Each structure stands twice: as structure tokens, then as C-alpha cells.
Image (cartoon, rainbow, N blue to C red; front, side, top):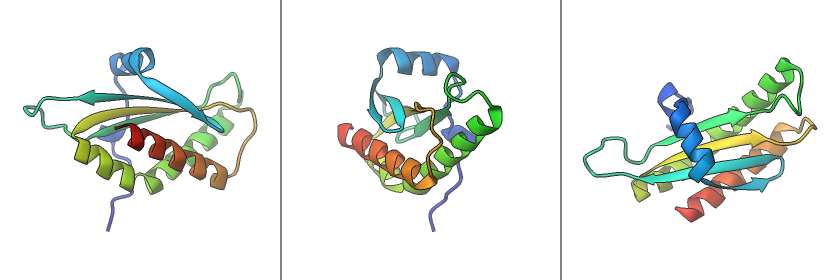
Length: 130
């Protein structure tokens, strides 16, 4: 049975890694998300091969109320957790470390179905570029 949790080691927390991802990474737009990712090839000596780190962001510019931002981040995390299995397999096969940022980029609050479909498409697009 697959593990649907999102442990701390899979969350992107390092400020230097986040800055590097937004400076050097590639990205795109799948409505309602703007996404950025960075694929890092690593040496065989490191143990962290095939790892994915993600971050979720909802800018205050679009949603002023914290409860709405938290609600949208929760929906996005849920969609990611439930649809990441195939993506994780591709990352493990490639032997790279992938950092991904999901940025919710619209003023509307969309349904879970819309968010889930967008997250799946983003993961497919990133997986194809590995």
C-alpha cells in the first residue's frame, strides 16, 4: 500500500535551495498554478538519490485572508500527495533530486477537482523533462 503522507524531508525548506530554484530552475503555467522546478543530478556517493522536495505557495497579493490561503494550500498538498506516485517512480529511475514549487496564481478559489487535475498535469510535464 502506498504511503500518502508528506513527511518533513519531502518539504522544501532551505532558503538557499529555494533561491537557487527560482533563479536557475525552469517553469511553466498550468491554470491555476505557476510552477518552478530544478532538477539536480547528484554523485553516487550521496544517499539522497531520487528524492523530491516540494513547496506550496498562495500569495497574499491574490488572497488577503490567511484562512483562504491555508485552505488553498491544503487542497494543493492533498492533490500532490494523492497523485505523486508515478512522478516519484520517474524521479527514482532518473537518480536525480527534484525541487518543485507550486504557486497558486489566480484570485478565484477553485474546486479540488480543478486543482487536482492541474497538479497531475504539472507532475506529468516535469516527469517528461527528466
